[in-house]
Length: 185
Image (cartoon, rainbow, N blue to C red; front, side, top):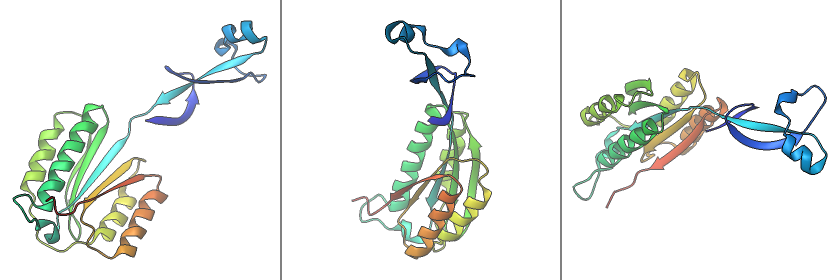
């Protein structure tokens, strides 16, 4: 979670040449002793991020040639990702959608929220067709903080509309990760 901000934090990043006006407390005297030049130590600050996991719960996700459907596979993937994100002390939010956002678990960095996420995933049943683009545009308008948006879907929708929705999310400074769920067998 590299931060775009450089400062004087815990994690060393690089040296840069001294410029008059820099804080002298951050001079690297060892480098000065070896090179007779002044260098400032720069550090990187780590930031936490929010991951918004969006799971397509449309009727097309009911398909599966074996015992496992695309929706069940997507739900398992979402649960695993949520667990991993919470385990590394970042926040996660979950959205379940078809034509609109049907269920939403707000962001939390509390590991105990994994039970709420799994309960919501287990209870959700597909009922309608999908409209991914509408959901992505709605999310782009609602997100106040930059983060990562993970979309788990079979993407049976208008391709250009979906790409426009993804572009809208990216325009807000969010990273977008797509998981294309196909028949798990």
